[in-house]
Length: 82
Image (cartoon, rainbow, N blue to C red; front, side, top):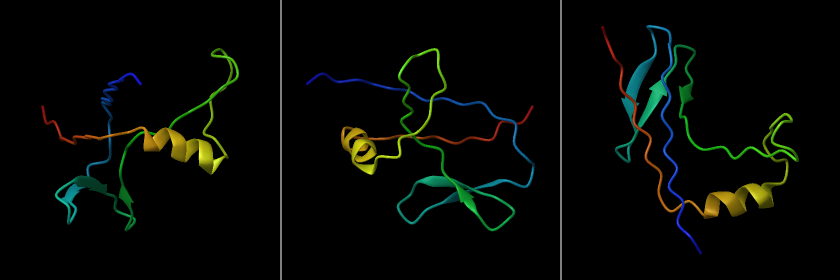
């Protein structure tokens, strides 16, 4: 089996009232004002043709097979002020 490294970096404009909070495991998630939390992570998308619409799978076994291949995940959050 081969190793595949995937780096995900997003730059987003978000509302000023979003906050970073630390989880009990030392990770970070975003606290939204509506008493919800947001974590951005991998979600595999599939298509029968790369030019068609991509969508998540309805088959949990397929999703779990892909997620089982992930050995580690590192998502970093940082607010940037200008």
